[in-house]
Length: 133
Ligand SMILES: Nc1nc2c([nH]c(=O)n2[C@@H]2O[C@H](COP(=O)(O)OP(=O)(O)OP(=O)(O)O)[C@@H](O)[C@H]2O)c(=O)[nH]1
Image (cartoon, rainbow, N blue to C red):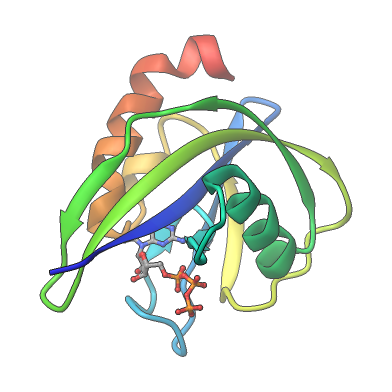
């Protein structure tokens, strides 16, 4: 099966990370995730992420670090999630697709109902929290 590359943004600010909840009209409705989306033909991952975050949240970000990609098999597809740590550098958040978003500290992260592919990213993020936040 083809592996679908998906970028996602770990946006950090004031010791917290932004997570967004997928809406009823999206895949995995109700699940929380790091916002982002699928790579388009010929697009590099960082440009994809900047574009997706502008489309979904209406803000500008700058990428500051990368975390380890995660390959995950869903029943109908396999994705390769490419996580980037990022900084919010402009604009106001205005959700185009997600149901809601929130800022969470390290202790709150694991209480969210996350997309299963995101769990290894969450572990890596909490391990590196002190250096990244
Ligand atoms: N953006 C994002 N997608 C994730 C995460 N975790 C995860 O399993 N996914 C899955 O990866 C796929 C990405 O699709 P998407 O719907 O966000 O991407 P997109 O906006 O480019 O898709 P579309 O144009 O087909 O609607 C979905 O199946 C989604 O459920 C995550 O943290 N962020």
